[in-house]
Length: 238
Image 1 (cartoon, rainbow, N blue to C red):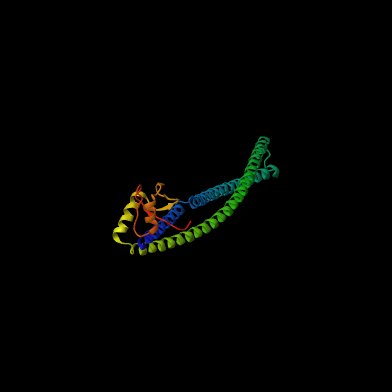
Image 2 (image 1 turned 135 degrees about the vertical axis):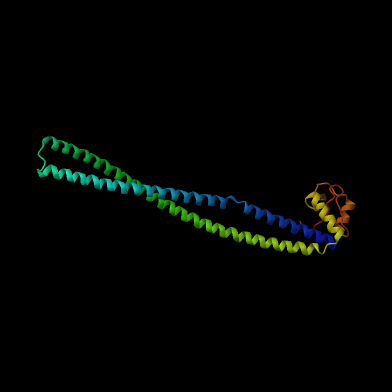
């Protein structure tokens, strides 16, 4: 019966369309792209934080350098007065000597601090370079993933479009009352046609009576399972 064969083809295409839609849904919900996006954003935030830290250290180094120049100027001025012979007062000389020692200590501390800042800056620059390399690699992988995602999505959408065309074409050839029966069973049972396997209805696994089995094999009319009411279909293919 041509109508039964059309119904069988219709169900196969509808089932395949469901598979395609499920694949599209799974792709849309895929966590990989979301994870990559978060990873890139995290790297960008880390890079931004490191660059700000480098900027702060650079500013601190600049200020310390200015302070160091000022201290060196003060020390040079005091030492010039100390060794020029202009100042002869012993108390004044002692005061200036102690002051120069304090300045030398301050210079020493400042130079140590500046050395530490320079080391921190070098370390931050290295970290920035590592983050940039990882960021570039992730962006490249993300770009490739997006292209692959778009390619697969477009292919699936094209398949879905073809399946919908098949479904529309087959549906238009099915008689109205038969199509309505098929749709009603499908709505209630999930799928309308049950294949007979080893004399059982694949929908409810009830044994099909011989007289009903002969009717199904003859394919001269629409036969429904007496138990689940699905339309029965006998396939000669294993």
